[in-house]
Amino acid sequence: MQFMLNVVGLKMRNGLMAAIYRKCLRLSNAALQSESTGRVVTLMSNDAQKVRVRAPLLPISGCGTYGG
Image (cartoon, rainbow, N blue to C red; front, side):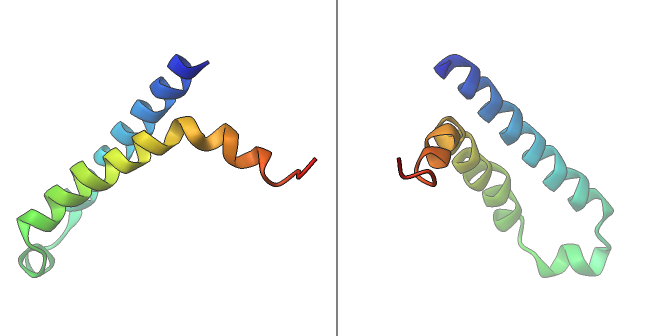
């Protein structure tokens, strides 16, 4: 189960990184100049990594709503 959740997390991270990359390709020159390269790299690496790390916790988050 843990392995499958890690695989899901990797797929989510890769999808998010691809979406950010595609968005960067569609931006105009003016928009590209307003954002630094470092910010885009941070979005693609750090923020996407946070999604991957938290993906295995998704089933646990649903348990708290039932309260037993």
